Structure formats: C-alpha cells, structure tokens
Length: 129
Image (cartoon, rainbow, N blue to C red; front, side, top):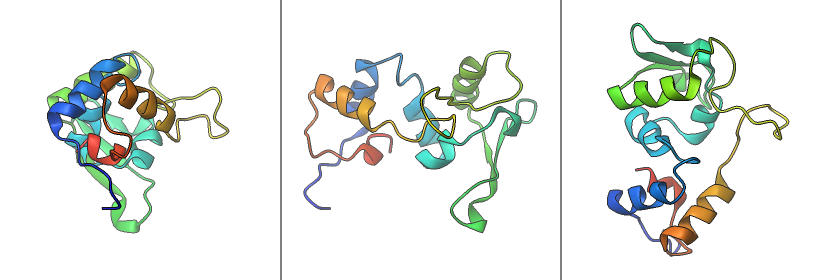
C-alpha cells in the first residue's frame, strides 16, 4: 500500500478528538453510511428524509452509486446537529469553495494528524474505516 500505515479505529477516534469542531461525527458519517468523501460533501439537506431516516445519494461516480442509504442513530444525530432547522442547502457548505460546498478536508486531516501524533504516511481514507 505504497508505504502508508493503516490506522485502526482507536487511533481514528484519537484523530477526531484533536479537532472536535472540525470533525464532529465526520468519522461516524463515513463509517456508518459507507459514502465516500465526494458523496458526503455533495450531500444536500433536501436529500435527507428525516421521517424514514434515509439519505438519497443522487450524484455518484457510477449509475449504481445512486442509492438510498439508511441513517444509523448516530448518523441521524450528527446530521440533525449539522443541519439544525435548515430545510435546504448543502450539508457541508463552504464560503471559499467555487462549488459552495466542501470538496476536501486534506488540510484539516493533516493538522489533526500532526496533533494526534499519527505517522505522516498514514492514509486519511482509512482513518474513517
């Protein structure tokens, strides 16, 4: 795996705890939904069904990627906290991004990795696994 270290769940949580305002529930969203970062960051509030606790993923790299994803209790809680009373818009908005939503958290992951004392060659995709 090109010299990268696989980081286990305990160390993933250690990473998340280094920057709680940046990562509140982020690792839970990735773990519990099996959505990729592209799918997470393009998530719109209109595609969250609070009553049936389902996320509709309309935009994926493949046609098979269009799907409905059930919300676990913790995903429901994270999304409710993140969205508040808003009924439309991006779940992960960004004022600086041309797309108006987050596209990457590479800088935040790098900062958190350093604070958590994780190796430089650890793989951010595996942090959330």
